[in-house]
Amino acid sequence: MEILVWNARNKKGCTLKQLEKLSGIPKSTINNIENGLTSPTILQLEKLAKALDVRINDLFESDYK
Image (tube, rainbow, N blue to C red; front, side, top):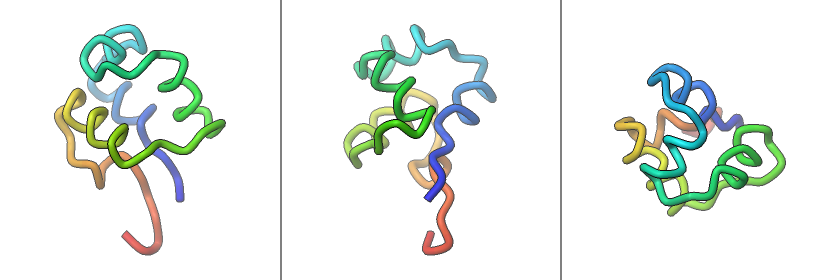
């Protein structure tokens, strides 16, 4: 599964710091998610989707989506 948070964030022109403020998720955690160092929880995906005004499905790619 490919996580697409970076793509969505850049498409919106949002910085890590802005997304941290909007989502309540520390920017270090967002950075780790974007770089594939950690997998996001469903709750984190929901918060990120809400902050970026996208659907949760837009934040990942999977053959089983």
